Image 1 (cartoon, rainbow, N blue to C red):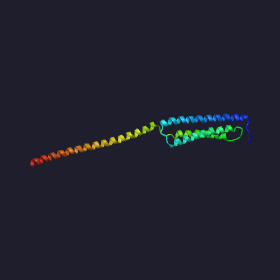
Image 2: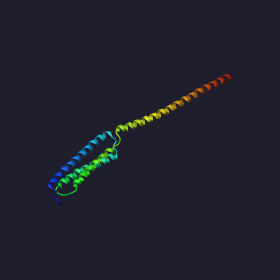
Image 3: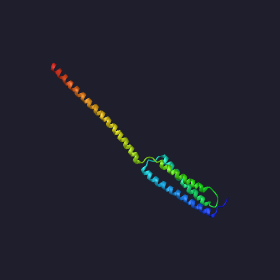
Image 4: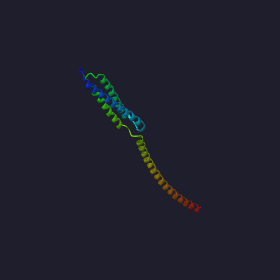
Length: 158
């Protein structure tokens, strides 16, 4: 084990604090975004998977940073792992935002468009039924006229 100079220890402390601040800020942003998304978006499995993975990486980054500070006097790779975990957490957070489902407004809009299309098809069917009914009414009127003529002929022959 080699020891580290006092200047390097101070730099490591500052770097760790900076990465911890970034990780905590990103975690806070993810929580705030999740609160908004729950109210306005349709969330599926993948959003939850990526958001939780991101939160785990960000929390692990802070924990690794704490362990790195405990071992400031030694040479180790904890600072690099802290930075990598924080970056991975940020990237997974961005992926979770992309994985969000459509907004409730978009979903409602598509449902309204589908409903409008159904109403259009029903109106077309009703128009066809109305046209067929008028044709049947015309045929019935014609048949009634013919029946009346036949009845008069039969009545006149008796």
